[in-house]
Image (tube, rainbow, N blue to C red):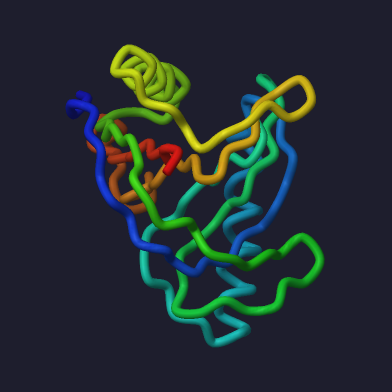
Length: 163
């Protein structure tokens, strides 16, 4: 099930992430990456302030430069593949999906198509053979560990619009 696309104002939010370049599909890599991320957050005494975000920095399908991120209470100094920064404030086009993760590529396509049809412009620019985004996320409100029924997994796709 999909919600209708919408535009919302998001505040700036500090985050910590593991930065990686991955190739679709990368499902098998996620548990290890998130395990490392949560260990890093815990070791630094950070407080989580929101759900896991998969931040798409540069998209050159099937390759993605991503940050597997968690909003936290403050920005810290990065270390190796661990980075910290601010998710940008501003208007975002969003759509929320209830269902298995296998459908998220199509969900992204629905949001991008809707935005294009509506004349909206993303805060993005060409980069090499792909596209760089100021803020493009999949926000995972729950996980298979919390919700074993894949039809009840809730994911929001959010892409920052140009100011």
